[in-house]
Image 1: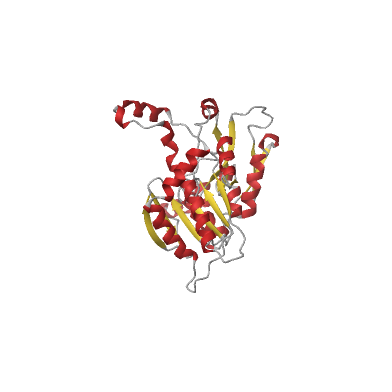
Image 2: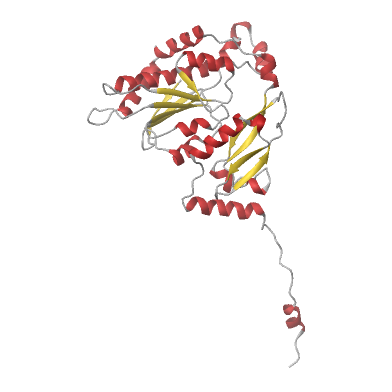
Length: 325
């Protein structure tokens, strides 16, 4: 029986189209599979390593990053050999949803990176110089915070989290802070223009730009006081560590004078300090704090603070309250 025209057409092999079969489609599926299999997005050793690499950036031709699947990639350092770089390397985090939903910007080799190297231009900051926040201003702000009803309510609720049902205190050895804000940053030009347009009696002092940051650091000291008051007799002291890549030298010096250790200047090292005996305080951090900590430790408490509100979570991440700052 002769072959029909339709049979001949069906027998012709037509090329398959790679429609939507992009590297990103495959990568996002692979990231989801790895996550479901229990792969960690972040590890302490990786975060400590990239922190150290960026600190030594002036002598490094490349940076080495570990991807979600455990493979390694190398990224060129554009500032290698530059004597006076105006660009400063910092860690940029890519949280889980970025790996599986967001359209990536970089090359396919970076699609499985949960952290990358970003670059911040410091010319304007260095040109304008520090605001000049003094230790006295820091002290006055802390006194106002300590006298506030918000501080009283915060103290009461955090104390409940730190004490067990039998009255014994949970072990806390350190308070690790993220993104509390620089204490010497100057207002942006747009802020100055808007402020100048306000009626004279409504204009704000430039120093008011750091009011929230001052309160955040006062909260860190309050947490330390609460831990001390709850601790069992004979227990060791508690360390206060703070990470904010925007800290300038003047702020670092002021914090050291108040007993706060500055860590993670490039935005990653502070996470390696978090453990099960920590209280975490996060304000304006440009990082997925909850996701990172979930992979690293189970701290005693996590406090989220912002310009307008703070939330306190217990060991099991249940919401305790919403406080207005």
